[in-house]
Length: 132
Image (cartoon, rainbow, N blue to C red; front, top):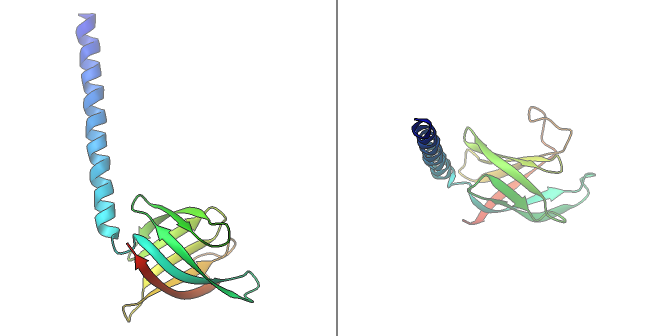
């Protein structure tokens, strides 16, 4: 009798794990399908904090929601879709948005660590997708 209860419990746990895994895969694949437009490597430009000099760098958005860039020593971060734009949060406190403009091009909006999204961006530039 005890063995049957343990067996049933283990079967239920295994089914729960299997279902969770399938749901997670389905959600992840839907996330990737909805975001193919933004997954890839983007050429963008940014300024020093004093805005004295512009630098070209790259932002790479991965299909698992992680991100990295080539600014200085390279930052790591995460990104999500918010409406029709990619919102990137970097480990150093910076935030960036890549979005499509009304003329069909893309732009990057950079927000310094203390700048909120409802404030004017610290800098803006074109965003050019260079690879998937």
